[in-house]
Image (cartoon, rainbow, N blue to C red):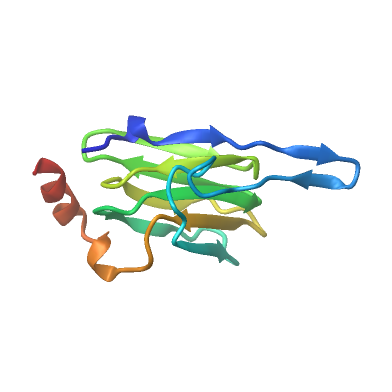
Length: 136
């Protein structure tokens, strides 16, 4: 079972030129899994929060493509906050971690690379259910 200490910031390579920067994300190279789905959160109203769930098996790689936001990670015993505001850094979230997202800046874009296609069966949407899962 993973803990919040297993979730970490990953530095992504950034190729700089006078015309701008580029960062590349590739399956099983700098992303530690095969990417099966990509989605992004945007136009999140100020003061709103997202997340509020965990996953049984899903791994995620989160990038602040624009702006900033804070992830609150919880393994049932410990919590940690991770502030993202740099598109050359990603947050790697392991399975079995409860997550909430808050403090979205205006114009922020939260890009998520996921190890699985969407499956409602993989979601832990009730915190008590999540805690029971962590005890197994």
